[in-house]
Amino acid sequence: MSADLIDGKAHAAALRAQVAAAGARFNAERGRPAGLAVVLVGEDAASRVYVASKARATLEAGMQSFTHRLPAGATQEEVLELVVRLNADEAVDGILVQLPLPPQIDETAVICAIDPDKDVDGFHVNNAGRLAVGQDGLVPCTPLGCLMLLRARHGSLAGLRAVVVGRSNIVGKPMARLLLAQDCTVTMAHSRTRDLQAVVREADILVAAIGRPLAIPGAWIKPGATVIDVGINRIEDPAGSGKTRLVGDIDFDSAVQVAGAITPVPGGVGPMTIAVLLRNTVVAARRRAGLGADAILCP
Ligand SMILES: Nc1nc2c(c(=O)[nH]1)N[C@@H](CN(C=O)c1ccc(C(=O)N[C@@H](CCC(=O)O)C(=O)O)cc1)CN2
Image 1: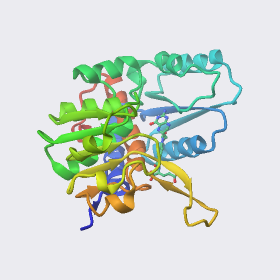
Image 2: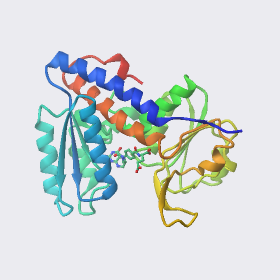
Image 3: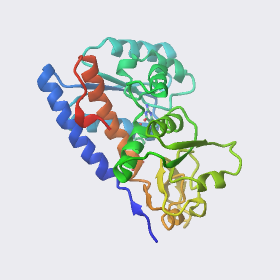
């Protein structure tokens, strides 16, 4: 048996087209495009690529893109000053500070300084709290993207057993809350979970967000389960070519034999992260302008 592949690139392209249409409606109503500001501190190679992709995708969706680069040695005050300036800028509807930040910067303090109404990453404690209690807010991009893929596959998720492996504030916790809101029976597993294999085996829906390459083998997975792999890990090619390759937290080659559906890495969850970021920017722009929800942007 071989699982169906969940094509994140195709889903992301469809969402981006919908966002572009919603962005054009916002522009027509308000006489200005929605705007996204992205802050990059330092020279991390992967972060530079992601920030460039975000700027390109923002422009392709017909929105305004503002990229702010600060040197690796920037101080906490400099980063906070920039965030305060972006909070006050009326052309900016969404603010994202690319993570990770250099060690001298207090990540929590920076996230807390972002106006929660412009927090398109959904990382601010106000937005995390809103998600926890089921109020409208801005929802983190990667978990919302995973939920969209799951809804496209299953329709209703009610009653399904979901296991989220990983308890980060950015992916694991919001993912579990989103699945609970969909009436799944949710288990959160993590590095201290006893008998992880048995917990994983329960899952109709398995979301792996551990950050450890190939950590979950196919033998652990319930036959027919839907597997969402959030991990993006660069490893040395085991064939010894000297090259590196991207792998997820799931051992894809064995999991694909057992699962009912699975996201590949690359080309699964990753592309959804940027598409949802654009979606969140239009949602933030509409809310800030006092406009009602745009139906096509509701997951
Ligand atoms: N402020 C934030 N920082 C970070 C986030 C985030 O959501 N907000 N997430 C990640 C990085 N990230 C976006 O910022 C991101 C990672 C991966 C991809 C992606 O499309 N990956 C491709 C493969 C790319 C490659 O070849 O290297 C894929 O999976 O197909 C998009 C966005 C950490 N920081």
